[in-house]
Structure formats: C-alpha cells, structure tokens
Image 1 (cartoon, rainbow, N blue to C red):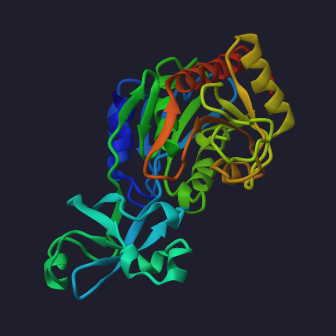
Image 2 (cartoon, rainbow, N blue to C red; image 1 turned 180 degrees about the horizontal axis):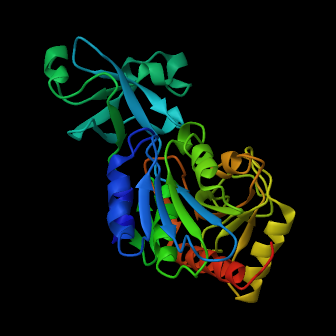
Length: 340
C-alpha cells in the first residue's frame, strides 16, 4: 500500500529525499516529464502541450521532526523541533535518528526526581533529550552527528475498517491523493508539484509556483479535526468521515470566492461528500502560491486528520477517496471549460 510506504518514510523538512524517491517511482508510468528544482521539490508534468488552463496541483512531502543540536558527555542527544511540535506530546516517544535510522527514545527527568512545581507544568524541550542507549559521547558520535534529523517511529496500521493510524499524514496523504489523480488526469496542462519545507515556512511552494506559472493552483493537505473532546465546536467544522474540507481561510491565505464556489458546486454536482474548513488557524502551501508573480488563483482541499503534527494521526479512508474524486472532477470541469 503506497500510503503506508509514504507515511513510514523518513522525510522531515529539508530531508525529503526518501519520500521524493517513492513518489518518483510511483509517478513514472504516468509522467510526461519529471524533474526537481534546487530546493528538492519534485515536478510531474502532464499534457504540457495541451490546450486549456495551466493547473498546478500541490502537496508537500515533508513532515515535522527534530534536529540533533548537541551530544552530552553521557551520550544523550539534545534536540530542537523542525516544524510545529507540541512539547507536551514528546516524552517517552520512540524515534529514529539520522541516516542510519538509529532507534531512540525521548526521555526526561523521571517524575520521582521532579520538584512539586515541575510536576505541574509541561516539560519544555530544553529539558528533554533522545536516548539511543549510548554509554558516552564518543559512542554516540559513532552513530549520530550534529545536524542529523529524528522523526517519530510510528508504523502505519489500520485501527478499524477504513480508519488508519500513522505519522506524517500531513501531508503524505496529500501526496497519495495526487498520485491517484495522476492516473485519471484530463487532457489539459497539469503539473503535479510535490514540495519541500512546508512545515518550516512554505519554502518550497513559492519557487514552485514561480517556476510553473499556473493559471490555477489547488493544494491538497491534511487538516485539523474538531470532533475530539474539548475542541471548540465551531459548528463541528472539519470532522472525520464527512469528506474533504474546502478551505475558506486560514492564517496564510483567504480563498478566492469564485474558485471556492466552483469547488463547492463541483462537489454538489457529482454528489461528493464535502465540508467547509471554517477554522482560521494554521496554513498551507496556498499561502505562498497565491502570492507568486502577479498572484495566482488558488484553493485548498484538505483531508481531515486527527492529532495532526503528533506521533500518531488518524484519517478515514472514505475521506481520502472522496478527496481524490473531487480533485479529479475539478480537473474534468476545468477541461470542459468550467470557469472558476
């Protein structure tokens, strides 16, 4: 299963090579042209000589992770986050470190050794470390170097029928959607852009949009779910199993109203389950794409994802399938001359 391979791959921001290789192999049978840029984003061109609006479909390859910044004399590894990670979820999580995928555990001072005041507060990252079992610094340095990355070691699994658990659904699920849509791409000029470094500031998407120069861009992303205990209700916006979420706005962009209506009408015409992403937190590559050159008509479709940016995330298979269906139908409507 390709989604399993994608989520289990090692690919924090700035180190997306393993993910890119998996995507390149999967895309090769359908690609007319395939290439990378200096930053490492992967481009797959379809029907580049065809007539019609030039479309950019985008999903980012990177995941949140950690970077080793110091090795203690006792062999413990100090680290800093790469991307937005809540320190409260880190203690005792299993990780893999560096190019040799060294197993390790995120540790902290045991509760028995903490002061009463420390027990009342989440442990900050500067009090955490990764333990790879090394006896001392020299032994740790045989396996790990300053600047090496670490990612969560979560393996893909199916919890109940159609409910999947893994790391990095943000945004390997978007990459898998693009690869499925690639198989049914209509005869219009479409470029699939698998971008890098989204989690540290949308860094790959801007150059990608500048290079492709699309008339229309559509970003496929994983997004937060509100159907968990204690979440603000917002009319139960963005819930698992209700279909892809069409983004209204977030911290990085505001959807073009005409394109928003076009996407919603397409979903209604083909009776594809969908919902509106009404939360304003977070952002995705649309934030960089819509500002490229003189501005680009850009929209976002998101797969609802519980526990986003955490070691274990949950998605619904039907949401993924409906995201593929809606994305493909949007392309079909554009090929028929639909005007967003």
